[in-house]
Image (cartoon, rainbow, N blue to C red; front, top):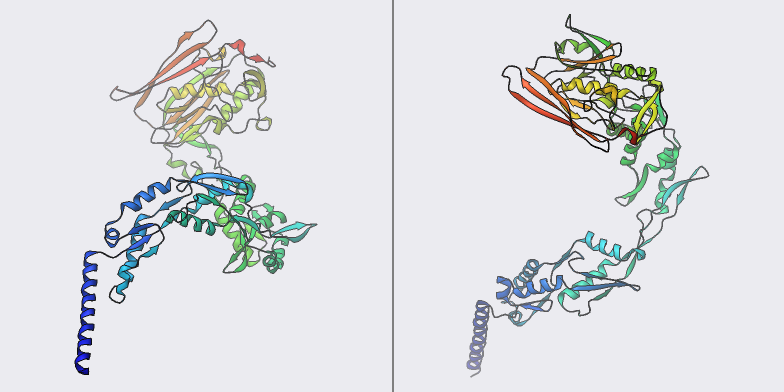
Length: 551
């Protein structure tokens, strides 16, 4: 009988186990488990697989909900979106799937009837979060200050580090998680501060003090040709900082500060634009000759000079030879034979009879500066740029100029006679005029109004572009009080025709408006290729007070 009873118990146990297996299989197949609870939102297995509208609604509502952040009597209202917080629905669903997948129903059937809890997943843009907090509670925060080197009474000393104050972002995230999960109803979040430690302490600097002292006490010089620049001790010290690298303090150089010093302090003395040789074209013999030698340019290569400086420091060198590029001019003796100048492209003239001796001097000096200039294909010629400094040291004398609504004496008065002549010359070519401005009022010496061009450093300028395929040469002629410019180049099958200037308006208040036209034609077909119109507006002469006059 005992054996019979045991057999019955075994059959009963097997029956219960079988029933349990059947139940588990049925429940799993029908997705009847309780699922996962994300915050206060319950997700069944079926909802996890298909996604859930409940989470989407929760996201939309919560991200636009207004929170109040407070700290010591100061508060600000923001939304989660403004804080840079985004509710991650998909990541929450994936987290829920992982939780259910990790649980074995067969090993623990009771898991079918247990609800797993997870946090609703969210992400933050830390830069946006910190910016919002910093702007709202600026007075509460303080950046930590690293220990630093300084000079006191001529000796290298160490300034103390200072701890800072920052918000406890981890504590804020804890409160945000509760709010997002729905386990916190209070939308007022109190911010707490924590101490932020400096990266570099006095002890770090003490370890490197002897090395830094040797560096700043060494006399370091930048050199180029016969020039040299000694770097002051204080400047050397400002170029270095101490940073932690793999937990150890290391001297690091501010590359940008050194580069700025090279560009701002040294480059101005080193740099020089290449200057073309001035050349003269003899129309009778069609020969070119150099009338003034040019020179190579100089351009400080700041990046390579910086690299050389740091290399010299490592090897103990006290002088760094600057790296300087030397661009060649477009025109120099060796390439003169490659320049094709054979044809006059256009000419223009003005007269300046009755001008004072100082005005005549300034006309001659500035005309000479223009003469011999070679403009390469595609290059823009700037009258002001070619003119260079206008001062007593460059041969100019004081004469009347129009400036700030007045007639005042300045070095170079009368140069506009030259720029006006240049304008008329270019108008008789097909070259593109890129900058031109008339004088403020009508100046009788230039003849009929509307055909003048004023200049003043740095603006206004007179400029034109060489639109031919070959270099062009500017030359001047002075015959008594008549100034002429000729522009030479190679044949381009174009001719210009000037119409005007015409007076469009002459008003009772003394203002005048004029226009001058230029048509460009193909010399072979006769077709018009281009048309330019240059308008001028003049104010009455008596609007301009004369501070002094010239004879």
